Length: 286
Ligand code: DHB
Ligand code: FE
Image 1 (cartoon, helix red, strand yellow):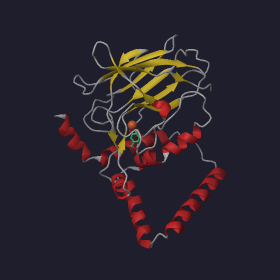
Image 2 (spheres, helix red, strand yellow):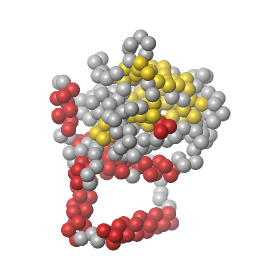
Image 3 (cartoon, rainbow, N blue to C red):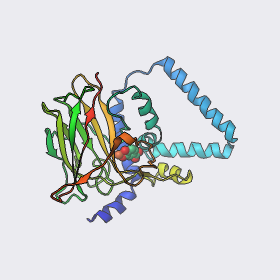
Image 4 (cartoon, rainbow, N blue to C red):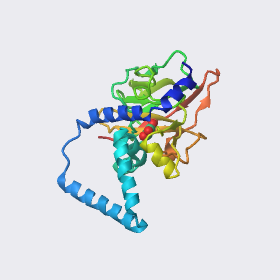
């Protein structure tokens, strides 16, 4: 099957991607603790009253109210709540939660993280197909504390889509751990991943989220990005993303998750075998 064929096949399957994202999220949600009733009251009453204000401001009609109800039901039927919320809401949660960090900037996790990716040591090649399309990329650096001292035993989990914009375990037809790996730093705090550069990513758009995006006059694209979770003993986990200088959609990310500090500038390797770039993570103490 050519890549073109698989894209056509996958394009018809936002519901499948959505269903997978919902299934993974439900697994993770089992670990969510009790909600605090006083906070639920405070947040829910404010959220409802913000909604009421919008309705009053725009003089929303019964027809529009019913269209909203029908659409909300469809998002659930398509399994797209993880996709919709991570694109349109998560960035505000991330900004609030990480506001006081002094180390590396965070960004959204998105719906496609899977724990337990293969362990590759301090340096390794990401699981990929023999003919994995895309420009090879050497991505490495150091994990340090706020003083710049290297952190040994830090784990760097890296996951990203392929050259066609597909994530393993969510799009069909990819090896289970394709382009997902876990690196562990040694005494020098260094990690080095051999991978390929991901392409810009279009969120699944043939379901309810796509209908919303079209009707609201938005577009479905995210700029090309690497996803990361980095943590070390006695230091806080940072979940973030890294982007590529001069890439498409950097200024119009549908998920509003780009920060200037998170944009990489890869250079061509001297031997012509692809690109290389470094990024040093700085972790806040626990
Ligand atoms: C979505 C996908 C991503 O790869 C991402 O980083 C954020 C959101 C999504 O489809 O919702
Ligand atoms: Fe992503």
